[in-house]
Length: 220
Ligand code: AP5
Image (cartoon, rainbow, N blue to C red; front, side, top):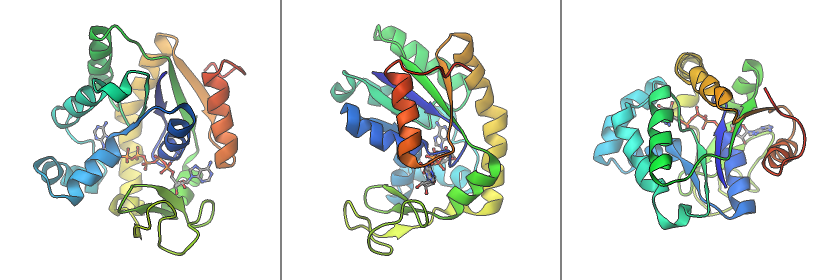
């Protein structure tokens, strides 16, 4: 199964991708996580990406596309994968399509998780992320068992630099300008399904599972 999760910043793409990856035993590919690890490790990619990420802008395609293309060619993606945070503009969507065509594979589902701005700000302002494994928490809706400690790996939890309100605004603007057209791209070829991202994490997960497993009507 090859799945793309779309949605504005804070919609719950990463949260849902991790749950689905476990359920279907396929890898989650998060460009945001990959870039954050690169920034933390001060790799050449990370050094280039940091200023874009801090300002809420998209990292240039030439830095991102090859990472995803190489990743989906790896053996563990043979049974499928979940893309979270990619593609984010038309050029990336076209590069993905070209790669998959070359591999004689296709995308099975594109799920857009719809969440309104007020809820996005509430989700992002209280988000905490593990420095060790990138697991995401929410101080109210999905708190860790022990304050500031990751339940999964014991790593330290931190607040992302781009979760400040002014950067959230910039990210939402980028989403509208660059990523909205990607939704149309997948709507046109009949792959897009839209779900309401409001509700508990498990409720939203169930809606996505219903799409994947062919239950319910989530046509846009
Ligand atoms: P990225 O990390 O992809 O950020 P994003 O798309 O803005 O999405 P987020 O990670 O902020 O949110 P999410 O939808 O995953 O929500 P989450 O599950 O964490 O990208 C960061 C930056 O990297 C970009 O700005 C860009 O610079 C660069 N970048 C990345 N990919 C790129 C690309 N392809 N091209 C170019 N540049 C790229 O949930 C949010 C919070 O809400 C959490 O606290 C969670 O616990 C909580 N929550 C989740 N679901 C629920 C629910 N149902 N109810 C209540 N709370 C919930």
